Length: 125
Image (cartoon, rainbow, N blue to C red; front, side):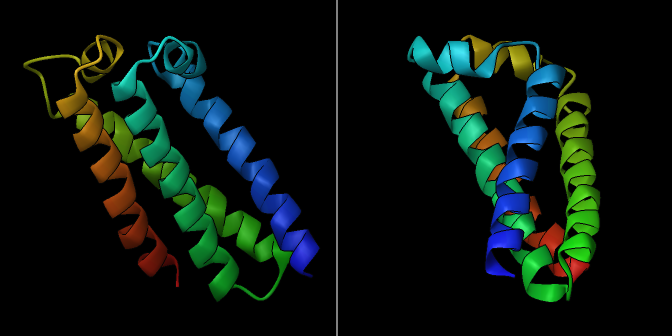
């Protein structure tokens, strides 16, 4: 059972990160390789947020399939939060600021991902 949850969680983490890579206007791993701290913070927040949602799903659900289903719901909610953050800041583009290594925006993005993952996780339980 442990190996099943673990392998599904790793697979989902990779798939969900790939989805985030598709919706951002910058290439996360390319920017991180260049030393872009803002992108590293935002991506780290996404990784933590996804894993935290997975944690709540595994803890609350009785089967791997059920946990996987709810983790997809949780990821969609994180994705919606990402788009809301971009939409609610019309003064500047979140993605452009993060790509330009604006660490303040990267930090806020990380904190939003982390904090909302707790809310999403608690809702799933």
